[in-house]
Amino acid sequence: MFQIHPLPAETFAPLNGLPDADLAEKNVQVHISDGAFPCRVTLEDVAEGERVFLLNFEHQPGNSPYKSRHAIFVKEGAVEGHPAPGQIPASVASRLLSVRAFNSSDEIVDADVIEGREAAALIDRFFDNAEVDYIHLHYARRGCFAAKVTRSS
Image (tube, rainbow, N blue to C red):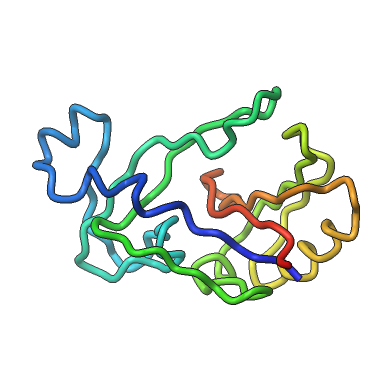
């Protein structure tokens, strides 16, 4: 069994309510959702008409050649979504994914590209390998980080 984790809301809380000019100084773009912006905190697509931040985020801080950062979307005022163990949120299941399995040294030990609705079986298969410590899901088309996955207890 596995657990998908949202990014922590408190990481982005200081952005809420800032004027657009202040956000721009922090290299944060503001967009109005068309209903298809996947928030990394709520783990849902942001409803049409709501404000969304586009910002650069270090999703792989490990000290390895795979250290990485990329653009992500976060809904203004986002509240963390916590899916049940073994559940793939609709915002993830509805997209093509790059699934990357990492060891405890933050190195990729396996990876694949798969339709999100088929991700649960791949995640389970990756976690069958004792060398896999955690998994990252990325939206394959744009390469953006989606969520971290760990084994659930």
